[in-house]
Length: 173
Image 1: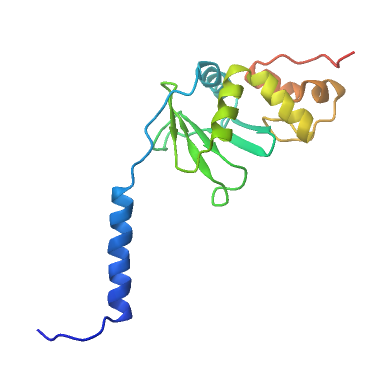
Image 2: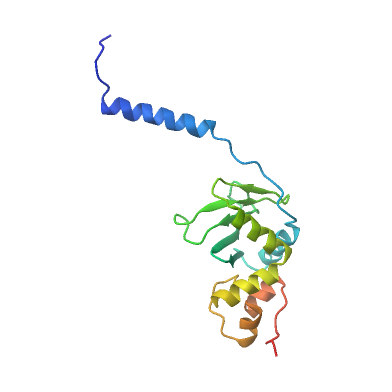
Protein backbone atom coordinates (compact mmCIF):
# COMPACT_ATOMS: atom_id res chain seq x y z
CA UNK A 1 0.00 0.00 0.00
CA UNK A 2 1.38 3.33 -1.04
CA UNK A 3 1.26 6.31 1.32
CA UNK A 4 1.08 9.94 0.37
CA UNK A 5 1.93 13.15 2.21
CA UNK A 6 -1.23 14.89 1.01
CA UNK A 7 -4.99 14.36 0.78
CA UNK A 8 -6.56 14.91 -2.61
CA UNK A 9 -9.68 16.96 -3.23
CA UNK A 10 -11.52 13.74 -3.97
CA UNK A 11 -10.63 12.38 -0.53
CA UNK A 12 -11.64 15.65 1.18
CA UNK A 13 -15.02 15.52 -0.57
CA UNK A 14 -15.51 11.93 0.56
CA UNK A 15 -14.60 12.81 4.15
CA UNK A 16 -16.93 15.82 4.13
CA UNK A 17 -19.76 13.57 2.95
CA UNK A 18 -19.14 11.15 5.82
CA UNK A 19 -19.08 13.98 8.37
CA UNK A 20 -22.29 15.47 6.93
CA UNK A 21 -24.07 12.10 7.09
CA UNK A 22 -22.89 11.59 10.65
CA UNK A 23 -24.14 15.04 11.71
CA UNK A 24 -27.58 14.34 10.18
CA UNK A 25 -27.78 11.00 11.97
CA UNK A 26 -26.85 12.58 15.30
CA UNK A 27 -29.33 15.49 15.06
CA UNK A 28 -32.35 15.08 17.31
CA UNK A 29 -35.68 15.43 15.49
CA UNK A 30 -38.26 17.41 17.50
CA UNK A 31 -40.96 15.22 19.05
CA UNK A 32 -44.64 15.65 18.26
CA UNK A 33 -46.16 17.99 20.83
CA UNK A 34 -49.61 19.11 21.81
CA UNK A 35 -49.79 22.88 21.34
CA UNK A 36 -53.50 23.23 21.86
CA UNK A 37 -56.77 21.70 20.77
CA UNK A 38 -56.58 21.21 17.01
CA UNK A 39 -59.89 19.29 16.83
CA UNK A 40 -61.74 22.28 15.34
CA UNK A 41 -59.04 22.79 12.71
CA UNK A 42 -59.00 19.09 11.81
CA UNK A 43 -62.82 19.10 11.57
CA UNK A 44 -62.66 22.20 9.33
CA UNK A 45 -60.38 20.36 6.90
CA UNK A 46 -62.55 17.22 7.08
CA UNK A 47 -65.61 19.27 6.16
CA UNK A 48 -63.83 20.98 3.28
CA UNK A 49 -62.37 17.69 2.02
CA UNK A 50 -65.88 16.41 1.37
CA UNK A 51 -66.49 19.40 -0.93
CA UNK A 52 -63.14 20.25 -2.53
CA UNK A 53 -60.20 18.10 -3.53
CA UNK A 54 -57.34 20.09 -2.00
CA UNK A 55 -58.40 22.18 1.01
CA UNK A 56 -55.92 24.91 1.81
CA UNK A 57 -55.90 27.89 4.18
CA UNK A 58 -53.54 30.87 4.37
CA UNK A 59 -53.45 32.87 7.60
CA UNK A 60 -51.38 35.88 8.59
CA UNK A 61 -50.56 37.64 11.82
CA UNK A 62 -48.05 40.48 11.75
CA UNK A 63 -45.22 39.38 9.46
CA UNK A 64 -45.92 35.66 9.93
CA UNK A 65 -47.86 33.91 7.18
CA UNK A 66 -48.67 30.21 7.33
CA UNK A 67 -50.20 28.00 4.65
CA UNK A 68 -52.10 24.95 5.87
CA UNK A 69 -52.89 22.21 3.36
CA UNK A 70 -54.36 18.72 3.60
CA UNK A 71 -51.86 16.04 2.61
CA UNK A 72 -52.79 13.56 -0.09
CA UNK A 73 -53.19 9.80 0.03
CA UNK A 74 -49.65 9.27 -1.28
CA UNK A 75 -48.10 11.39 1.47
CA UNK A 76 -45.92 10.07 4.28
CA UNK A 77 -48.71 11.35 6.57
CA UNK A 78 -51.93 10.98 4.53
CA UNK A 79 -54.88 13.13 5.59
CA UNK A 80 -52.81 15.27 7.94
CA UNK A 81 -52.32 19.04 7.66
CA UNK A 82 -48.97 20.33 6.42
CA UNK A 83 -47.79 23.67 7.76
CA UNK A 84 -45.57 25.77 5.45
CA UNK A 85 -44.62 29.31 4.56
CA UNK A 86 -45.91 30.96 1.40
CA UNK A 87 -44.31 30.03 -1.89
CA UNK A 88 -44.30 27.15 -4.30
CA UNK A 89 -43.25 23.63 -3.40
CA UNK A 90 -39.52 24.28 -3.74
CA UNK A 91 -39.65 27.88 -2.47
CA UNK A 92 -41.43 27.49 0.86
CA UNK A 93 -40.32 26.56 4.35
CA UNK A 94 -41.86 23.42 5.85
CA UNK A 95 -42.74 24.08 9.51
CA UNK A 96 -44.28 20.73 10.36
CA UNK A 97 -47.39 18.55 10.30
CA UNK A 98 -50.58 18.57 12.33
CA UNK A 99 -51.39 14.90 12.72
CA UNK A 100 -54.87 13.45 12.90
CA UNK A 101 -54.36 12.73 16.62
CA UNK A 102 -54.07 16.50 17.20
CA UNK A 103 -50.32 16.66 17.79
CA UNK A 104 -47.97 18.98 15.94
CA UNK A 105 -44.75 17.46 14.58
CA UNK A 106 -42.58 20.57 14.27
CA UNK A 107 -39.47 20.84 12.15
CA UNK A 108 -36.40 22.78 13.17
CA UNK A 109 -37.69 25.67 11.06
CA UNK A 110 -40.85 26.14 13.14
CA UNK A 111 -40.91 29.27 15.28
CA UNK A 112 -42.92 30.41 18.28
CA UNK A 113 -44.75 32.87 16.00
CA UNK A 114 -45.82 30.03 13.68
CA UNK A 115 -46.94 27.86 16.58
CA UNK A 116 -48.85 30.73 18.21
CA UNK A 117 -50.64 31.43 14.93
CA UNK A 118 -51.64 27.74 14.70
CA UNK A 119 -53.07 27.82 18.22
CA UNK A 120 -55.02 31.02 17.44
CA UNK A 121 -56.39 29.59 14.19
CA UNK A 122 -57.42 26.35 15.93
CA UNK A 123 -59.29 28.36 18.59
CA UNK A 124 -61.08 30.66 16.11
CA UNK A 125 -60.78 29.58 12.45
CA UNK A 126 -63.39 32.03 11.14
CA UNK A 127 -61.93 34.95 13.09
CA UNK A 128 -58.31 34.36 12.07
CA UNK A 129 -59.31 33.69 8.45
CA UNK A 130 -61.36 36.88 8.48
CA UNK A 131 -58.44 38.89 9.86
CA UNK A 132 -56.23 37.55 7.04
CA UNK A 133 -58.84 38.47 4.43
CA UNK A 134 -59.31 41.96 5.81
CA UNK A 135 -55.54 42.51 6.08
CA UNK A 136 -54.63 41.23 2.59
CA UNK A 137 -57.87 41.81 0.65
CA UNK A 138 -57.77 38.15 -0.43
CA UNK A 139 -59.80 35.16 0.69
CA UNK A 140 -57.92 33.07 3.24
CA UNK A 141 -59.08 29.87 1.54
CA UNK A 142 -58.86 30.39 -2.25
CA UNK A 143 -56.65 33.50 -2.24
CA UNK A 144 -58.92 35.33 -4.71
CA UNK A 145 -59.44 39.07 -4.41
CA UNK A 146 -62.45 39.92 -2.22
CA UNK A 147 -64.90 42.17 -4.11
CA UNK A 148 -68.34 41.73 -2.55
CA UNK A 149 -68.98 44.04 0.46
CA UNK A 150 -70.13 41.10 2.56
CA UNK A 151 -67.02 39.08 1.66
CA UNK A 152 -64.75 42.01 2.49
CA UNK A 153 -66.55 42.42 5.82
CA UNK A 154 -66.17 38.75 6.86
CA UNK A 155 -62.75 38.34 5.20
CA UNK A 156 -63.58 35.40 2.92
CA UNK A 157 -65.96 34.62 0.08
CA UNK A 158 -69.38 32.96 0.06
CA UNK A 159 -68.28 29.86 -1.86
CA UNK A 160 -65.40 29.23 0.55
CA UNK A 161 -67.69 29.88 3.52
CA UNK A 162 -69.96 27.13 2.15
CA UNK A 163 -67.03 24.74 1.57
CA UNK A 164 -65.74 25.18 5.11
CA UNK A 165 -69.19 25.69 6.72
CA UNK A 166 -68.31 29.12 8.10
CA UNK A 167 -70.69 32.05 8.74
CA UNK A 168 -71.09 34.57 5.89
CA UNK A 169 -73.47 37.25 4.75
CA UNK A 170 -73.36 40.37 6.92
CA UNK A 171 -71.97 43.53 5.35
CA UNK A 172 -71.40 45.16 8.73
CA UNK A 173 -74.30 47.60 8.51
